[in-house]
Image (tube, rainbow, N blue to C red; front, side):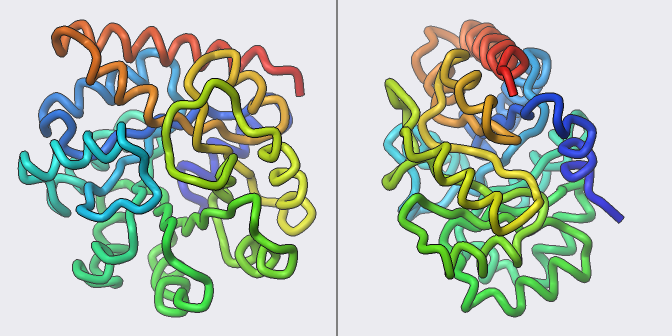
Length: 266
């Protein structure tokens, strides 16, 4: 049986890319994170990626690190992550992004089980290698959830094929080497990476790292199946004078990004 995320990609295949919005669970606190997710969806986000706040986020830039730190200070952990996932999944297809250590601490079997039980479609694991994925592959297969691997422009062809053959849901194409964050432009290597991935798999490819406005979203949506935006949404909340103002900013940003995605010529 396919996941809600897979069905979403299938419903838009050949027509347009989907817009995926990211937010850490518990940011700026648990209750308000739900309001932010609702504002994203109201503005046109197609799917939600819930971040598992972690104390050593090697892939995350300063904006997401600050949000995760705030969530951790508020006590966000596995319970809050799954509660946030359940809320988001009641609105749109939703997934979790987490480093491997929290999964290992929680228990691989328990994590996959509770992900499925709370309506989650899959998990992005940026620091899990194929060589260490044996238990994860068998467990996610058993629970019918997508395992989403991250590939970078530096990934060599042989390894790229190994990674994409084990992924499901979509492949996360990091648009550049480095950490998450806002960019004035999306790396020119992103389109080349998507092209290389497509030679190894037929599952969708979504691009993340650096997309922060409608123009960039349209640029990426012209060649990718999904556009992932995180730092820009978080900054909209961080820079707002109040939460209500932040919610307006989040919705307006989502509307701009969604319009860009839907205007892209494929």
